[in-house]
Image (cartoon, rainbow, N blue to C red; front, side, top):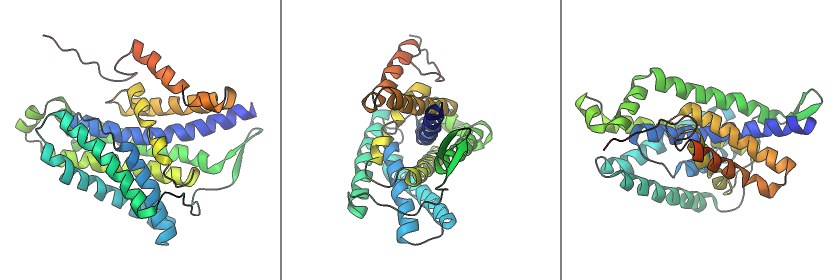
Length: 290
């Protein structure tokens, strides 16, 4: 039972971090109908930015987190303005290919600035342990769960009630109709990429505190794809459920069946789900009549 509780906390911590990155993926998809292959690398960038702010610039953690969030917003707006805005009105595949190229550029940028070796800094999340019954779990991992859920909840409220959130859904459904209603596509795209970068940065901040700073974080970013496909490409709630499901499956498989299987079982479950629900658990089913 102790091992089960420890694995569950670890799985929830990993899963909510996956969900944060996946939520950014969903934000971009809702706004532009584009699959963003660079989201995992934005997560990687977030880990190195918090290392820069705290270890290299020597900022207090509260100021450092704020600086990283602002830098993430700036990065998201720059990507939208310089890379994607010129492609507005072009086929969607053009934007998809641009995000693939952006993924390589971000990875190369991180390697050029900070190098390939792992980095470390003093974690600002609690480093002690917390007793849950007879089980002992990491306080940092435990605290990362409500932080991630709070950010995800804010994104969900944004899409439900904020004007820009509603505009994103309208643009994803029909760009021409949205334009005729006076919605500014460049503005909404900018907001979407800013939010996607912030959600990835927050996930990167938590990863940096829990697992450290290294280029291997980009491999963690690969979990974004099964998470969003499992939950549904256009559902924030699906990103949360998908992230938690993938996180728990990984740690349970690693803890009870062996580490090698932990990398395989989430994808096996993903394939089984897609055989029943091709649009994911909470994705919107699109029916085209011809």
